[in-house]
Length: 286
Image (cartoon, rainbow, N blue to C red; front, side):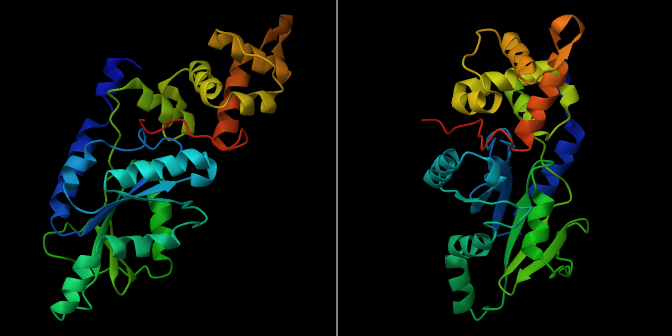
């Protein structure tokens, strides 16, 4: 990806969404942000912290069933250390989502107590859900809201395109109409999102993408890679490793040339389907 491509990543859409969220922050009590547990940094928009200010913030590490559990635990510890509650979840199956409501109410315990003292015990907390595209926000909302999908009446100062849902008597959830796009100032962000299938493979050549993924897997999970592909060693050159994978899978073309294109597509598919094992590509700073 060159700089021209980076600049062209949905700037108008992002600006509109940012304005919508800034306008809504005033009337919400907390923010829940859904990220991909395998790439917890690349699947966030770094502008979000500046937008929500000091509002209580909860992160759902979605697809935690596909991520390295020990690294997910390290991320939870990291986020907790900077004042953000973090919960590992699988939004498709609903695993871990039962912790969400209690986490919100713990984070906003003072506000609930204040409501009770003022005789406003029935007033619900309001939480806004945000997340970049394809990270699982819709799946989360469907799971947490369940059959209770009646929209709450329109609120002053909220655009009609915002959708409020009742979670329970003490909690309402706002699904923002727009989505935050990640920032692609760093090429690594685009690559990591392409690895997971969050953005189209076409932003990079498939073979190049697979070679970059191989570099990370050799760095972080060499044993897992060796066992999966029955390897005993790796080469210094990424292309040579891709050729090695093609040979091990019997992906050969005429003239005994390894079919690196097929091998690249297969590697990406197996990573995305968790067939290589539970993998996380980003670790917290030490």
